[in-house]
Amino acid sequence: MKKHINTISISIGVFVHNEEKDIGKTLNALLNQDLGTSFAISEILVFSDACTDNTNNIVNSAARNNKSIKLITSNDRRGKSAAINHFLNIAKEEIVISANGDHIPDKKCLRLLVEALTSDKKIGLAGPQVICVNKDNNLMGYLSKTLWRIHHKVALIQAKAGELIAYKKDIVKRLPYPCVLDESTTEAIVQNAGYNVVYVPDAKVFVKGPQRFRDEIIQRRRNEVGYIHIMHQFPRYRPATFNRKYLLPAIISEISVNPIINIYLAITIFSEIYAKFLAYYDYYILRKTYQSWPVAHSTKGVANDK
Image (cartoon, rainbow, N blue to C red; front, side, top):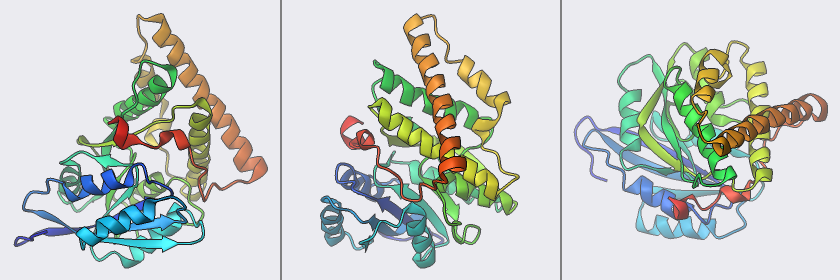
């Protein structure tokens, strides 16, 4: 990747556990980013957390064709936050991007994020708009797409990190252990250090939501545990989506003249309340940390659905 004078170089960390369905497309999307002449990707470090499928072979194949890609493996399941801390320790560049193996960024996503991040010294983190690729002609598709639409509407008012984030390594030196939600924890660290978080809606990343209700609850349950944990670690931090002043209008805007849609919306709200209840049980009774996430298998294959 040819550099120009005053080019800002970026280190990318991609974190995977059994992502054979998506990792090839993710790497291809990263390598084919439209970065202009101001930015360049210095390295793409793929951290394999005890993968047992074909993920490592796919990454090694891509690395043979592009020297910027490097595979770093762990035989034991250590969790994403441990891999991120390893990434922060060895990344060459001060501007870093964290992504999952099933994140498919739009062609200009990284450039828009890094432009926003470097536009002001007080900005410490930039996050994109998350686009759910599920079809919304069924309950599960509607549920996933609605949650991300609500996230988008709230983030337009108060910035909220979602999936795939760009941030400054000198601000976020490491994540605390245990850490369930790395993006929100990073957001809390940035804000706690006196820096700003920005939402970049024109930067888009594509993800796949759960296709089974059980997987939806697994995902939302662990997320809610993560939020509880973060708010204990950082007492001044509150996710934007916890602010009723922003959240309630976003939910109300989803009400439709179609009664089926309203039933779906009611189920979506119920699933969130149910997941919160389970999360409180997990955190305060069972003392679960979810350091190593249970896999929601129906979220895989975003590249095929996009």
